[in-house]
Image 1 (cartoon, rainbow, N blue to C red):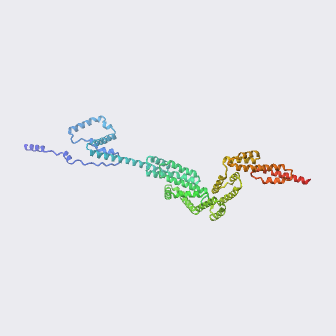
Image 2 (image 1 turned 60 degrees about the vertical axis):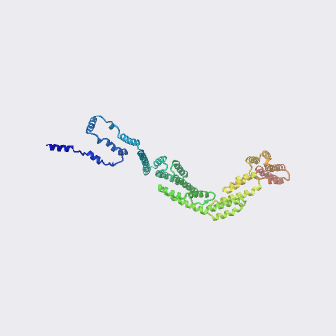
Image 3 (image 1 turned 90 degrees about the vertical axis):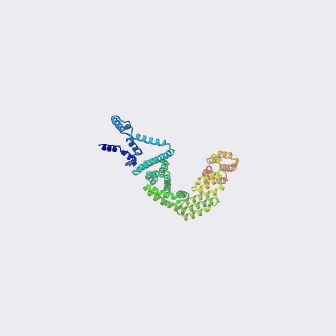
Length: 497
């Protein structure tokens, strides 16, 4: 028995190899947390810490465990403070506690390394949030586009671009939404020849979308299209001949605006067609019209500019008569250029006026210029130049006009008095000539009246008649029929006797 007891004692005195040592020799491997669905990073970061806080440590004895079990049993009937705290707050406390522990680390290298990790994590989170928000906005805009709510899509895109003006994806969606929104109405206005309304749509789109730099060149191109369509409509179509001094400037301007950004304009036309397929009819028409205008420029506009230069030179060097043959030759060579008839008409008026310049006074010239009314620019400019050279100053001219009107209406004394008041200064010569002429006519008229019963009455009558101007002396000219009737009556009575 003693042997057995000693054996039992020896067995009992053997060192015990509990599982605790095994745990110490083979620590529990690190666990990998698998995420089956989207969740907060706090759930992933803090879940193990929370579980660890609920398990006893290896150093706890059986009495502590029993005590803990007892306290947990007694707490069943009382609400726990930790259980009433929201779960996210508990996780936040754990996370902040860990952050505080790391920041308070005494080792500077560890503290610096943790701060770098923390900053990188924060930057990644901010970037992720930004990408999420952008993707969310983009998805909403795309859904509105698919549903045909283009106006709402434009508004939403512009709202985002106010804070992120350089976002390429949102800009593209904003451009597509805007074009799809305005294109049907814009095309309808073009078809109805309501060009002001079509331009209004383009200008309003520019005003409402100032942040989309990709859209503005397209709207500028649409404005050019409106101008071209308006020019062609007002011209009467592309089959209508070009009218000189009327169409060539518009043709040049339209082509220059296109050529200034030709490559980009072609790309934009194609891009607009891709975004708004209803643009197809306008697309085809514009390129066809552009080719026609380019052909007209090559065939006719150079000849027109050469003719305009020739007209200016002939008028400047007093060789206007040579223009008659030049106009005829040009008209025969270019039958699709209208307006040569207007030039010829103005030329005839100008030649007549030019012949009168040295034979009449400034007042008569001023009146005649007003009756000519040339319609072509070169003759308008030349007549204005001549008028400025011979015209009186406005105030002096007005006084001469008053004297002339008084003379024509029979207010002879008033007319002569006005001319006497002008008979001084640099206008003395003109006023003196006018005064002498009118005074002589008045004398001839009075002499004629006194010679009614004399034998030389006819001689006085012819003298008076030859001194009159039908336009300037209208008052005295009106007496001639009465005088002639008087003479006829006297002759009739004389024959009767």
